[in-house]
Length: 130
Image 1: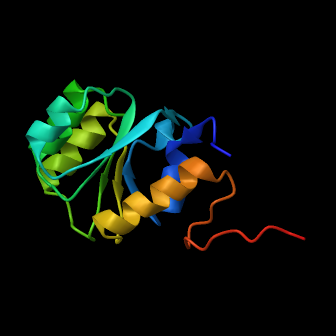
Image 2: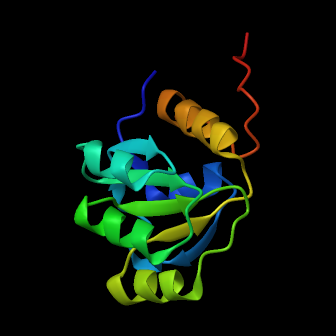
């Protein structure tokens, strides 16, 4: 069963994330997801109100997310964003999430979250009761 609405708060939980900025936007709905480390791919996605999963940590990824109307940015692989990127995210109210997960694992978790409204952060599948 596909879930109708996923919030930024649920993304943070599913990805075992740490929210760096954008606390006031945790209940905002996420309509779709994109995952890339190439700015040109972000620009070509043609999505809005999406969560961007990336390994990039610079100001440019936040500016690109902003102009493409991403609802949040998730930095994967336990990378630390540049201080200027954190400042920009806070100043412009962009939810910035850090996750220790690899890009692949983060994408798998997001996929489970989209398909299963009861998906758990540890990523184990739910067992149907008999």
